[in-house]
Image 1 (cartoon, rainbow, N blue to C red):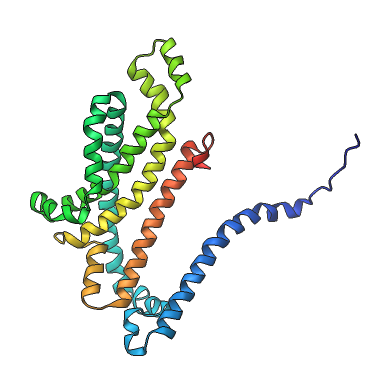
Image 2: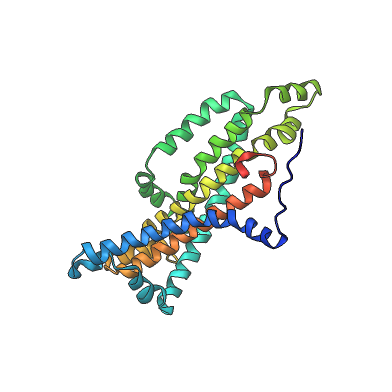
Amino acid sequence: MVGIALPAVPARTRPVLRLAPLARKAAVPLVCIGLALGAWYTVSLLLLAPDRRFLLPPPHAVLTESLMDPAKLEVMLRALAVTARVAVTGLFCAAVLGIAIGVLMSQAKVIERVVYPCAVVLQAIPVLAVVPLIGLWFGYGTAARTIVCVLIAMHPIIAMTLFGIQSVDANLRELFTLGRANRLRRLISLELPAALPSIMTSLRTAAGLSVTGAIIGDMFFAKGQPGIGTLLDNYRARLQSEDLLAALALAALFGVTVFAIFTVAQRLTVGRWHASGR
């Protein structure tokens, strides 16, 4: 069989070939952003009458009248920092509690039968219905905001931790049984490493939910330093549409950043040996 020699790629074109996949990945988000801005301009400038344009001011008005105003931007960034602290604290508490509860349920069916229905019921109850009780029991400050984050973010961590541990290959379990490994050794050396892709996926989901919970807590619990959710509520009440959209854009950017951080963390931890991190 005669081999066919392929032409060698010149060295100067190799960096271009490496950049091509990156360009393709960046093209889709850029196109989506462009379409969203085009739709925004269409509604604001063509569909809304000038006297009703305050309902949805065009993007350049939001940029020039709000985001480029140093005084307004400083207030928003300070509020965003407060929301970020609450979201990170709530996510940390939800991660610790969720992983611990998931591990406990995986080790004893009795605990799973008792705890899991309670977790499902807690997730099924709309958080807005529980917010008044949280305010009565824990006050209207930072603690209440953090509890809202925990309630919203904890369920996916519990469910995915339990799923990951229960999905361990039966042959590997038998191997540890033949090696006379006790329950703790099996948990540390087999079950938790095998469940790591599921746990990291749940943390990535819970990160976005925690940001949502922090913003909801800001809106309902106004004591203490105002968060970005407090500003959103104030801007809505005062019909400050440019500031409202600017604060909303900053909150969305923060949520995307948190999600991206956990995406990178997932790739670093499980990307080399599991498809979920690639």
